[in-house]
Length: 287
Ligand code: PMP
Image (cartoon, rainbow, N blue to C red; front, side, top):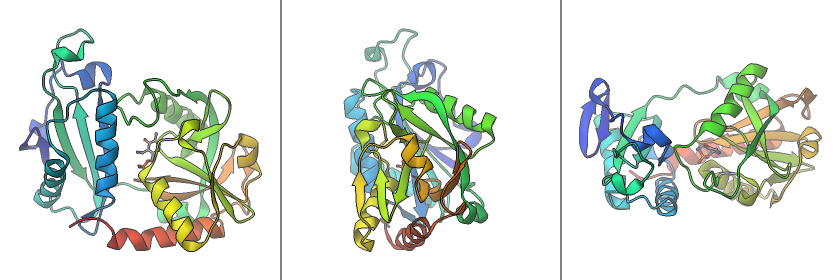
C-alpha cells in the first residue's frame, strides 16, 4: 500500500507525521473522504471544491493547485491498483511549535491514503439501521461550522460513542435550537407522504456530497425534495428515514429512539434512491 505524503509515495510503515504537526496537536487541518467506483473518483470536483473552500475559510494554504491535487489522487489510486474503495485526503497545517499560532507552521502537509472499504452488510440496506438521538449539539456557526470539514471531529466522536453505547449503527444529532442536524458522519433524510425532506445546512448539516447527489436524483426521479428544518417528532412519524454519506451511500433507518419507522425496514423511496444511486456511481466520476 502506497501513501502519498507531500509529493512522495511511502509505505504504510514509513508514512509518519511529526508530533509537532498541528493537525495532531490541535485538529488544525481539513479532510475529505472520497469514493472510487470502478476506477473512477466519484464527484471529484465537488470534493475538491469543498476541500478548497474549507482551506480558505481557515486560512490554510494548500500547497497544490486543484488540478495538481486531482492528479495526485489519480496517481495514488493507480499506484495502489484500486478499483473500488475509499480515499482519505488530509491537509494538515503542518509541523509548527507548541503554540497555537498557525504562522509557525510554514508548510501544510498533504496526505492521501487509499483503502478498501468495510461497509455495512447488504442486509443492513434492506432491513435498515437502528438509531438514537444524542445529547451532543451541532455547534453552529462558529469554528465548528459544519461547512468546514475540519480535522476537529471530537463532537462527532462523542456522538459515535453514544451510538456505540446504545448499540446502534448511527446516531442523530440536533442543533442548539433542537432541530435535527445530521448523524455523526452522515446526512439525514426523512420521507413523509412521498415528499423527501432534509435539513438545510444552516441547521448544522454538512453539505454532503452524497446528500447533493441524492437531491439531484430526487429531482430526476420526480420526488419533491424540501430542504427545511424538522424535529425529532417528524423523524418518529416519518414513513421512511435514511442516512447518506460517502461510505454508507444510502442506508435506511428502521428504528429511532425505540419508535419503529414506517414498515420497520427499508421503505420504497429509500430503496428506489439507493438503486438509482448505485446506477450512477458506476458511470459518474473522472478517469
Ligand atoms: N456529515 C458529516 C459530519 C460527515 O463527516 C460526513 C462524511 N463526510 C457527512 C455528513 C456525509 O458527507 P458526504 O456525503 O460528503 O460523505
